[in-house]
Image (cartoon, rainbow, N blue to C red; front, side):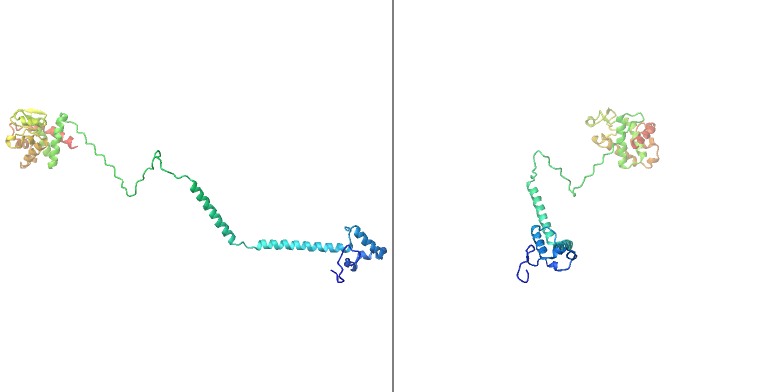
Length: 296
């Protein structure tokens, strides 16, 4: 707005819209004389009305200055935006709120999956899980296999029945703690008296009620050692038991002083009081072989 109250009109016929023309210019100094006359001035203004896009000396400088200012303003604005973007610090409340909302969404999705999943129900066709042993359960050790007894083969011309009876004599003597010499004397005596067979007596029918392998007729003599009940060796039942008969013989042998140093036939005769005292000696070698096989 001008001081005289007239509006500035760049295209008006009057007024001083061309205030920049007051400044000396090389363009104006080189202008033709006709341009400096009032008619030329009116023509110039009339031409400006007809062609507003025509270049005007004063307006050219103003447009260049205005463009420069606008460019500087844009550059300043971009620099402020860039500085503000680089200098701005993120609001800590925004990431925290976003993280909390993401956690709630994830939890809700998990709950939705769990709620829609079918619950596993035990079925009669489905075998149950194998129960696991509790730590407190003790594992029982496997029972050790019993050692297989060594098979004793018959030796010295004996059969298996005779060898079995010899084994019973040796076992009974070992339970009594009798030394090996006493075992040999006992086996040799049974070889002579009964050929290592458990005899029953035809004179004592009772004796046949017990396990036996042969029947003899020598008075009331019974068993492996042909001991007589009438002589006080024991009852018929006791004397028909190989173990008892052996213990009765060895007990009588141990009562003989120095029996271990006596010849086999003398030691055996001292117990048996046989009518043939020298008959026991012939079985000494065979008796040693049998005891050796049994003892191993």
